[in-house]
Length: 272
Image 1: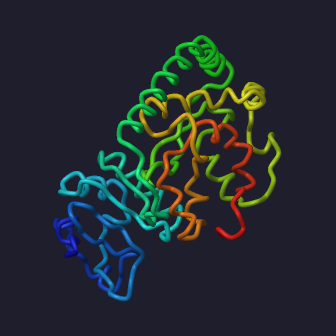
Image 2: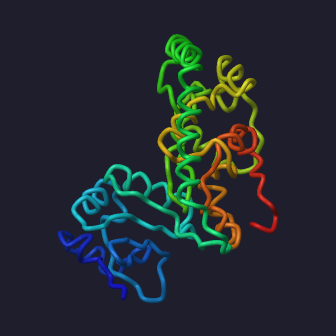
């Protein structure tokens, strides 16, 4: 049985006259302590101010009994980013609502735990071994390219869970400019237009900007081997059949060249 939780989510809000004929861009459904965020259907819900203001949504999520949020990718990348940021601040996990995919023989729990242990140990060894290089890169970035050290982009992980992927910043600009560049679509931009620094070009040449991915492996968000980790832009363009593949834990090896591939969006034409 499903019930609407509009009153639970925003019981402190009273709609004013200016919102009398305004409706929400989505439909909220409460199901077994999960909040489902779906595109607006034929049955319109009252306008809820919290759904347009991030801080209000964060406060509502914090004071709600929601254990996790599942959001429909049909709402688009901008809405996914909005909800992901709010859920992160409210300490609520957020998942894409994706199909279960093809049925297959479940992997033994012991094998899964063993693989996880191997991933964790190998990632930790590599992280310790590469720590002098990483500290050197951090020092050079602080010296020649002041600003944030890591870029944190939303990616789609196992069972559609959204998580932050860590990479060294390769540009002289912040993540907001990266989003503006990505919104330009398929227009090919030069390195100068992207603001890539000399140090950034050197890191991209050898793939050193991806070294912080080892932190994602330690956090259990990625594996050493597995399918390539998809961006939100790619995930929302997949059809239902391909979205079922998001149930697998993404791998760090296949994601190592993600920057070089991201501009091309190497998705099979049947998936669009």
